[in-house]
Figure 1 (cartoon, rainbow, N blue to C red):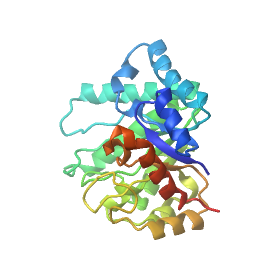
Figure 2 (cartoon, rainbow, N blue to C red):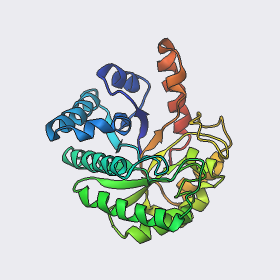
Figure 3 (cartoon, one colour):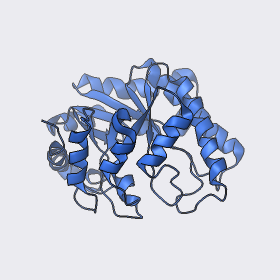
Figure 4 (cartoon, helix red, strand yellow):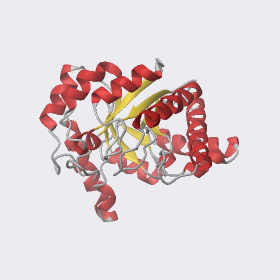
Length: 273
């Protein structure tokens, strides 16, 4: 098990700070917020991700996962915009496959964060077809589907996730468990793991409260962390322990190292000895 930090901006200086803070690995998130990169030429896409990979590896860190571009709301997007985003996600997965990054995290498409779709069955089937399409692009990386927050979250619970895994029917589809999204739906980790078991391969660790997606430091919200630790032990989770809180990004630059050290020490509590 490695202690990992999601990061936006994988320049060498930042990567060196993560080493100084005691992290083992990095989860690349630049890719999730820059979908336009993956609509450029194949060479430009590869150079963008390769630069991040080289900076991470050059300081001795490992790479835990890469986050594909975020999906978009179907409520306020045209079919052409949705198709363009799917193409960007496909291209990201193809690029990541070339660079031997073990896991690529994707989001399902939603109707809207705070609105339920008027036709949930149609939205569900849209996601089944979309996820199958993405899995076909993953020649050398494993796709991890993330549980989502909000009223329109589509995959809110472990049972939702288990049904989607079954409906998609691809052995290369696994799970990214996001703790903040789980508490936003007022769900427990043990229930989630009971539904999907060893299909959980990656984690996004942060805290929140029911109905919100706040990306707080673990312990600042209402997530049941003892239940989470019990679930990790019970289901023998041995993947990376990865933080996705916004705590460090809100800290003054001259205190970011101290913030990273504090957050890493919190993560250590979840290591299975």
